[in-house]
Image 1 (cartoon, rainbow, N blue to C red):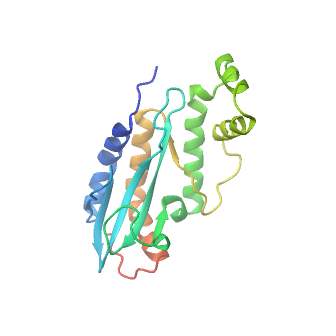
Image 2: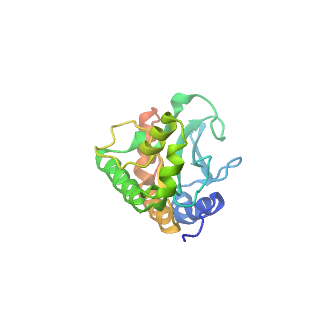
Image 3: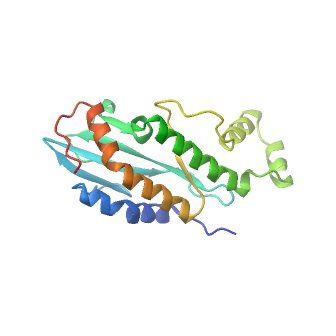
Length: 192
C-alpha cells in the first residue's frame, strides 16, 4: 500500500522543490496561505500560491493541486481583480501543456482506484448516473492535447510524483513569471 501524501506533505515537498528557485528570483514567503511566495514588482506585488484539492489525498486515487499567479497592490491570496490573476495552465506553451497531459496520464494509469475491480463496479452501480459519468471522466486519460486556457490540475499519488512536479515548476518558473507579467501588461519584469 502506498503511503498517504497528506496535504501538509504535498506543501512540504513543493516548498522543498521550489523554495530555492523562488528565493533566487527574489521571492519571500506569502502570509495567509499554506504555500505561496511574493515579491515587490514596482508599486505592486507579484504573488504565486499553491492550492491542494479540497477532498485531499484518497487511497487508490491520490489527489491534485494547482498554482496561480497574481499582480496586485496587496500581497494576499485572491486579492484584487481577477484579470490580474492567472492559473499556471494559461501560461504554458503547447509543448508544456503536452508534458502536463503526459505526466497526468502516467499518474492516472498507475492509480489502483481507477483499475476495474468488483468493489469499484458495485460502488458505481449505487451512484446517480451523473456522478458515475463525472467519476469515469475524471479517471480517463486525455486522448487529445490540452487546448490553451484549459484549467488542469496536477495529479499525484506518491511523493515522487510531487517531487517531479516541483522540479518542473522550479525549472519553468522564470519563463512562467515572465509570461505572466507580459500577459497582464507589466513592463518591469525581473526574472534573473
